[in-house]
Image 1 (cartoon, rainbow, N blue to C red):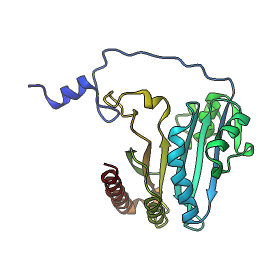
Image 2 (cartoon, rainbow, N blue to C red; image 1 turned 60 degrees about the vertical axis):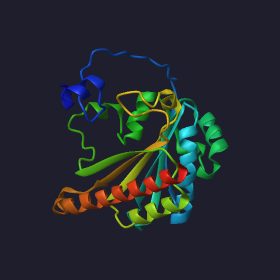
Image 3 (tube, rainbow, N blue to C red; image 1 turned 180 degrees about the vertical axis):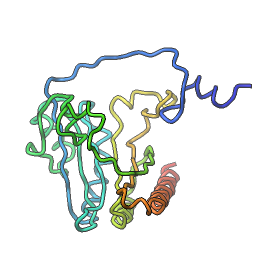
Length: 248
């Protein structure tokens, strides 16, 4: 009989598995010489930010294919209040990006001063918090090397406003944690649900990365941080299961 490892090697199991590569193809896509990258923060009350995040769920996955809009949720280091950091990329000029976003998400307050026009490769350095493109070549970069733990989920149904409020209230209590929400949709919605190996496919609204990080000096607390992340992850699983039951 075929063993489990052989089965997944032949079928293809995704990033956390291994596979037997027997064919591949490369598709080149045209990218404008100038693209628009952006990143900016939004502060406010838990309720105000929850409303923004709730609206993001219905907007980011439905944006035109040339637009990507992600958001990071964390506690403000100075006040322990929640903070949202929006970031993303538009394959075009800034004026078109601003017009497009204000049509579908006026509450975001997207404006030209939040945008930077640059080449596509420069946008990768900018969004990754590098100073220049050459930083990518530095194997000994001083980029943050703090210990961290990550879990990832795919979200198929929007989380109600009350659920988002509860998420932000939990995160307010752990300043070492943050979550990153990346909208799917676009080209991913053209990939059948049974496609393999990686689950970027139709039916997923966005991904959530759950992250907790700590300094080397806080290493003695690593078990506490990991325990907190597992608690939060389990809470999110229960929340999403309840939502799934409501929509069925």
